Length: 76
Image 1 (tube, rainbow, N blue to C red):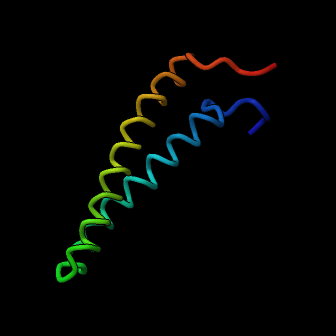
Image 2: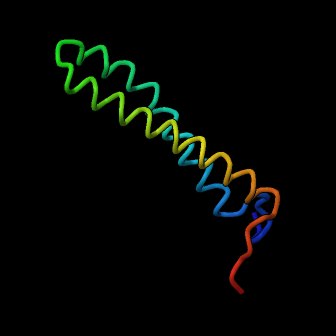
């Protein structure tokens, strides 16, 4: 592919990649929480991390919408 012909800019691609990886992590936390059933302190920590990741996914998704719609100014 010729340079510049990729339909997705680097920032959009990066955001999509981060959202994808954090979404995979959310799935993994279910297993980790099952493994931590006997340790409430660790289960609580894992729930907190999972909730933070979920919040980050929501924020990243909002920013991705803005970036894709052209709301980001690029430095010259």
